[in-house]
Amino acid sequence: MVTQKKISSKEMAPATGIGNRSGYLYTGHHRGFRTTVNIDGVKVGNKELAIIAGPCSVESAEQISRIAREVKAAGANLLRGGAFKPRTSPYDFQGLGEMGLQYLREAADEAGLKVVTEVLDPRHVELVAKYADCLQIGSRNMQNYPLLREVGRSNRPALLKRGLSATYEEFLLAAEYIMAEGNRQVILCERGIRGLSSELRFTLDLNAVPYLKERTHLPIIVDPSHGTGDARLVPAMSRAAIACGADGLIIETHYSPSESVSDARQTISTDELASLLRELSRIAATVGRDIPVPEAER
Image 1 (cartoon, rainbow, N blue to C red):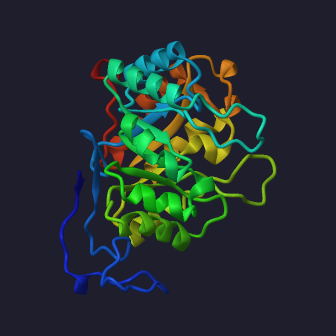
Image 2 (cartoon, rainbow, N blue to C red):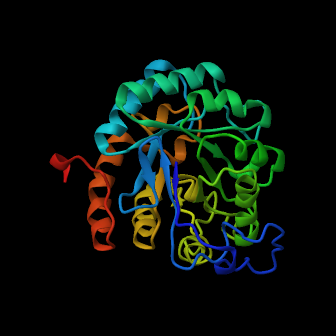
């Protein structure tokens, strides 16, 4: 379910340089209203910030079950984990496929969380939607138009990550592909771009948050894990993301990061997540937002 104030086409101005055959653009100038996306009861885009946490990859039933319990205790309200993994090398671990989806769903249900997981192939959208509450489209697939269209035909909210070298306009137009098929439940995610620095995996472009808030009504979250590629920097960039207006965070988390099969270098521990969310809850309060940290932990 998506909450959105209905406005006439005359009130909506098309984004700069973009054609407008249908008479309106959902991601165009929004005249001050904002969309709240509802992921089976978890709302993204309202006062309470979305915290999506979990491992890069689902490795076993025991691993994802323990992580789900621990991120829930820390204050997360959504569980992430990859069952289908796009890896730079074809020889790296590619995920457990449908078995991983089953493990993810069971772990989330036991912990009382909702599932966010990536779909890579248009042919897999129906399968992944059987287990997931929100379909993630990764940065490598931001301009995979057949995939975007197929996700647009699904009844699941979509979390769209910005491409590695995508402009803001290209990012918004990718969201349009999903919404043009009838699915208005889209969450944007800034996850870092390729910059001049070779010291870090990516450059986390936090300019995107306030800029896109001016350009679109869609909620915008930040991925400090991929955005830096370095677990040591995740807390600082998480603080900055909340302060600049992000509607939530997606953080790679594991009870023992060094044991993580993939992306270990950018993964923080579940203990670190709990400490970070307590700190972020205080920052959120100063900008009129809230993080669902257990009351006893505040």
